[in-house]
Length: 553
Image (tube, rainbow, N blue to C red):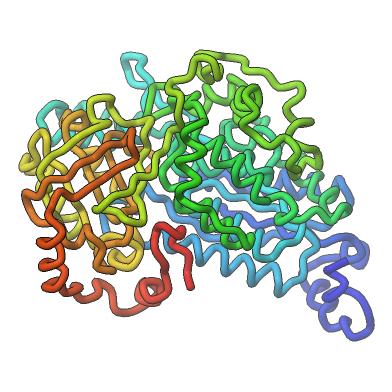
């Protein structure tokens, strides 16, 4: 066993003495040592319950003959970090999580790992670590939050909460109405209840084969989640026995399957950052153009919040990610030969699966749209591409041309929006918020929610080299690459310039003569760094383009 490096032989007597100091017995050290990476903390609603899942995982490991050993991973709540400098520290934790987990796994020579993440950067960070360390690993996430319910019976969620702030600024909602949303939007523990980034990544962890069926959708408060955790604890012992590793599972075909499921579900645009970063750790490259090719042949089958008025609990009741994949398999859109941590092929896993509610998961014959939920746009404004959640865009905004309203930070933009200075037809441009320029590529749920809450989401577009929350809806186009801090065309946009957006054609252009842009480029000077010390400063020096997944070099 790999753990023999720390438990066997005369020369490892000092190592064993330290295990004995921890209370482990000789018998426990003769079994496979399984690292249980638990992200529990008391600041993230999606993580407050993970200690219970860790206990269940450890019970499963022991039942199957292993010795579980828990250690932590950090996690940030994007909702609490939103709208202030804290959001600069969200994306950057992905690398911290991957690095620290790699260090713990390598230093202590575990035979296998069980990862217990839930929210946003925690999931991709641990997937990146799993690919790097490449020892048998299985994931079991914390599960989604239940939807909230207003006094009149309407269901609600976090995206409604953020939009309520915009409605309040527009005098469409009074103080009491805002407080009602506060008290009802987030009623339980778990990752927020719509198809936001956390739930998107938990679903894709299942789709890529690194988690057991149900991982993406079983609500956090359900006992079925505890049973899933026990099964994950038992199954890691089988993976260790078979020496089935993450890179055996996360193959090129598996990533293609994951992107296909991504398009069918209408996941967060952040998946376009995280999937390439995970693939990078597997020694693979995901071409952004492949995303549009997959999208062009993948029907969009789900409209969960913010695209629609259904929630993760509904998707789970309808059959979850497996039922979505079953629909996709009817058109041979998935490679059914890939393996998963269940030890079975995808085809074997789907044999007995059925779609239990075609109102929640549309059949492939009657999708919401014939193409996928995400589109990568390119053109003179974004030569290396940018990303939009097409399934959450109003039909009238699929094509739009309007004057640029230019802001050099999210803070400037949100002040203008709240002041009522944005008009129907405008194209709001927020720049110097990319991976380097931010630094940290802040999510911008506040400005997009304000626009939606003021009723402008059907007439105003928003473009940025930063990124958006999975809770964002409307013509919100992020990840513009190259970013402004690298002198990309978005840095050259001036107030009033015309910008043309054609989401159906995957095109985005700055309608300014090339000679004029050349003159502007010659005059352009990059602003000084916003942060000059600490981790963010180091991150800014090392991070690559959003088009490459914002990985570090």
